Image 1 (cartoon, rainbow, N blue to C red):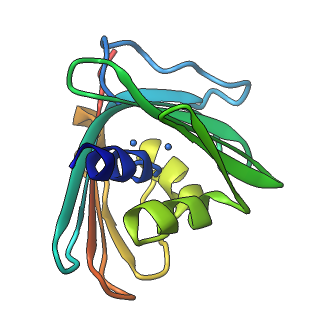
Image 2: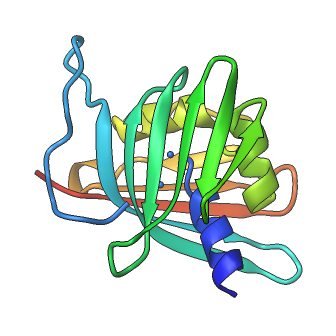
Amino acid sequence: MRQRWTRGAVCVALVGALGGCAQGPKIDAHGNPSTWAGRIAIAVESTPPQNWSAGFELEGGPSAGALTLFSPLGQTVAGAQWQHNGAQLVQNNTVRTFSNMAELTETLVGAALPLAPLFDWLQGTATPAEGWTVNTTGHAQGRIQAERTAPLPTVKLRLVLNQP
């Protein structure tokens, strides 16, 4: 059960989810946030259904970044890093290498999370992603929801960002 939770938390991430003290995001040279923290939850309507949640810290952008996932008690559960030439997942003192973050999340969650649109969603822009519907109307309150309906299985992603 712990491995399943941890595995899911990492994916949920990704979408680079999360937890910890409230703090404002770091701002990049263009005035956009480059670091986020909060909570992430992912539900995959597979057989059997899979649900994960974790605290997260995410920094960077679609081309390069890092994601750290935390248990409800604040312990680091897993971490992911990516660049243009691949992605790595560190979990239980084991490093796994993937060609990209889509492959990493597909392996862990059963669904590739849309990394580039996700960073737009975090900034409140409802950038379309194939098969996904996103709701950023709660962005001012730090809430973002997205759902993938195609291809199956359906995937529901919820993010609650820490407020400054």
